[in-house]
Image 1 (cartoon, helix red, strand yellow):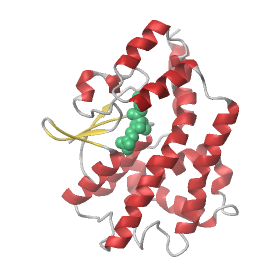
Image 2 (cartoon, rainbow, N blue to C red; image 1 turned 120 degrees about the vertical axis):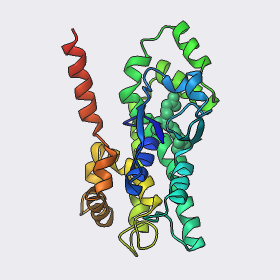
Image 3 (cartoon, protein in one colour; image 1 turned 180 degrees about the vertical axis):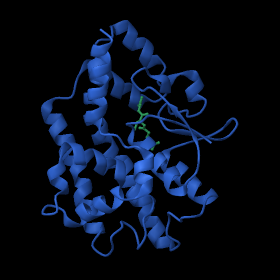
Length: 253
Ligand SMILES: N[C@@H](CCC(=O)N[C@@H](CS)C(=O)NCC(=O)O)C(=O)O
């Protein structure tokens, strides 16, 4: 298999975590989101939405949507199982994953893009921007790129995005009352879906994960970080990556 992904992307991280839990070997192909490699025709042939990740499961056969990819991986490699057998618990798992996609990701996007993409996108000329936008296949992402290039999110908007992202912690605190994991007794795709978001919250709002503020999520996060798959998935801190980039650009001058 070949995984086309970005190291800092939450959806990519989700798939890397799943591949690591399953101990499935794969070739890693990094896609540079800043250079819009995800909008190139060759990438759109793998994922028509123009976003990472895309997984090549056999020569010329591709899958997209991180939640779909994870369920596919759980089907083809059943051990360790990452979904409950009980249909009701499975439906709950899917609703939670959908919640992270629909409610948490858009808010994380505002924060991450402001940090990683806006400094570069604001420098594009109108002509460059038009050319780049023309390659983006979805209206939603065309708007997101125009927004980040021309109308940066205000501090109020970022604070609101942060507040909404943190609702995930409250949701998880409630879900973790009966067990150490989000759905049922075992680590599952629900936990995997949450990990990239909590990893980011650990950087931008660590106090939200304190034992005093959210004791169950605190314990969950400790347990997650002890899993060998967590290390294998390489969720490097944004701060570290930014520092490395800074260092590389000053070293080049
Ligand atoms: N629902 C998709 C979301 C994928 C997604 O939004 N990927 C982001 C990174 S986390 C991306 O590729 N952004 C670049 C862009 O929109 O141009 C999934 O779960 O696979």
